[in-house]
Length: 300
Image (cartoon, rainbow, N blue to C red):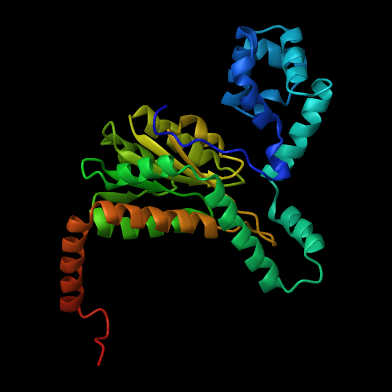
């Protein structure tokens, strides 16, 4: 789809996954193999956790088609395919306990500040290296369009990033809503969604079913979905037209949101550059209101 960012190949070892191999092979697959690939990607990785017969039956293809496809992907057989799949899923959904143990061994002897700063800097560099500039500009243009209303949704650990984005973007252009993560608030939020309104959703590992569900509902209402996710890409991507992947690994129990904040602040700058005449007027009005409310100390 036009305007959808292209995910560049990840130079790290984790880029060699069953999913990445499958996406790369799509142009060369037969009709039956493409049908199978579409089924797998629609609900990856759950779709291929079962035996060959179950996968073939669910996808509407034959068992030999499943075997041929995994062999085309470079695996000796279905067992080898599933072995790498389990390793990939384990990396994606690693719990805080598992992540802490991994980084404790990897960074033994380093000061935590140095190890953390080095990894965050690496994340920023990697995120910028794989970010499609044209796709980024398309997202900035959507967010700058005054005819489109914007909604933000985060997950358990990304809701503060969504809130920051909503607060600052609301000052820039207005008509920006921060959505609650409580499902009982969704129907009213979706009720007045117009085709072309923008939903910015944040979802990083461990991916949240609630985010996936809301993104799907918003897409059905005609929303233009922007997904800010990690480099493994949230399952919500199947419903998103625009994907901005970030690197999030950090030497500790929790992933880092630094690269997400970088992308958010860069989008804010891009929107302000596109709408400065309007934004300047809004900022002057806001500063006048701050003065009247006496919220900040005046410099002496």
